[in-house]
Length: 171
Image (cartoon, rainbow, N blue to C red; front, side, top):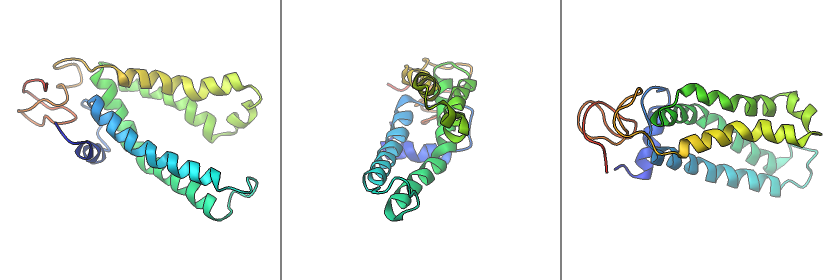
């Protein structure tokens, strides 16, 4: 069993690996390790923002910028981890496309034009990520599946957090 820091490091090492499987513990360690500093930066930025109309004013802008950099830096490792986590539950990585409406709504004017209709905005923002969170929270398939060996198996070519060949399942 790898420590939380080892699991996070494994996610960064496999930032470009979409095949294989990832354990729930790897998924949660990585996401919590990123959510905590992101939330702190974002909250500090908004709490210290005295003039909301001037987004480039001093410290609030720097804090928000740091939060954006954190998101951008962790996007690809997080996406590959999500795909591997979906593989562990026996699902195709194509389910990750459920995140697309969230990003399209956030990063385009579509979100601005829909703000009067909160039901649509909330649905676009939250439905896909909510479904993916449920999928990622499910227990992975036992043993080998279409996407590889069960994460945490020992022995044979690779084992470890994201699976490999051969070996017995971890306890």
